[in-house]
Length: 123
Image (tube, helix red, strand yellow):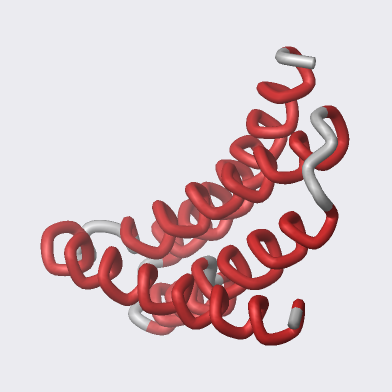
């Protein structure tokens, strides 16, 4: 049953990413890969909150697994972030490529840490 829930929530996460990406991509992609960055950062924040819930608030491990691995696994897309970085490099946009790489990595790590810290502070 857990495997089925992970698969279903993974599909829901991917569909959510697709919708949000479409809403954001047309507006700011010419400047920076905002959609992918926003999706990865928000997904990392959710994983941080779930981890904090697991560590400090007795979140059921199966619920954590289904939401973190299933939904967030389908929702986040770090492979797309790396493809976008390579495309920026291929078009000579070195500064934007480095910025995309650093912003995506650092903001996602900070969001995950903030999520864990928020629930640690509430413990």
